[in-house]
Length: 372
Ligand SMILES: Cc1ncc(COP(=O)(O)O)c(C=O)c1O
Image (tube, rainbow, N blue to C red):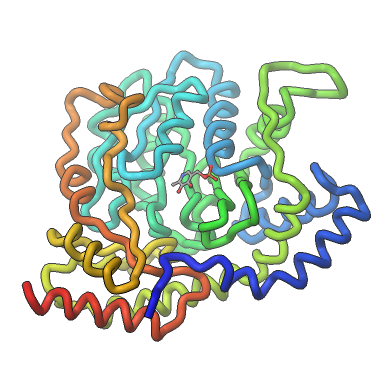
């Protein structure tokens, strides 16, 4: 049996006919940039996340850059240091630099692989203005502790929710807890388009107003520009697709959770595997199902040889990437991140994965560990 890491053809079969109809309507209405579908999606997504404003943009990366730029602009102070995790996709930290901030990395928590709030406080100084927790692999970070620290030191919080559409911390969806939440709709995400797309969610009306200007060249009225902005707009085609797929997001997330439970059951106690942890007050949505083992590289080779695709997210901590060399507080060490990047391996899990596929992958992993 061949098992793909992600299978977009299988998912998109379900939407193909409906999307063809929507395409036809978009062409007839010339609703290519802005327009009905974009407005509808912003309204629906804000409602789904539980916030007052959703500002759609061109990608998750742009959502990060714009939200940071908007907060820096509104704050207008000289504070520029932004604390984030080194165990994330490059874009999280790249966006800080692009938006004019300074990156300060903080080590992660071994249990949820997210920013460790107990370590965050150690590296805050007078120049710190914000924290960007990333809900990595769809598991929410400890937003109570992060919120308390932010309040104590007067910092803003941008949640990188690019992997956590629909996840919850207590009774709140990720993206509705901090000052802003940022989302990616890249084709591999739990909620995905057929191209690039992103959004910022917020309850901060002033920030929302700034972002609407920022995404459109800082234009306050036709051909009058207040500041340097961006051209970052979600197109009508992506918005129409996302509107349609949003109806199925909970169903897909629940499916991912069910499939993750099968992996949990089948792999518990096998070899030295460390399963992803669950928390009673958090609903993770398993953007990725990531286990840890010291036999990671061997296991990957074994699975690939047997027709199973898997991924390593992330093999290199961001503080070792060239643009961030030296971009962390000198007092901090990253023992957990250094260890985790050598052990993580993500198994196939996607919106349309079948139970038999998960069982087959689990069976292979058990076979692999018999020889250990
Ligand atoms: C955690 C995280 N942040 C940011 C991004 C950037 O999103 P995009 O690829 O839509 O620019 C991604 C996704 O690729 C991501 O996983």
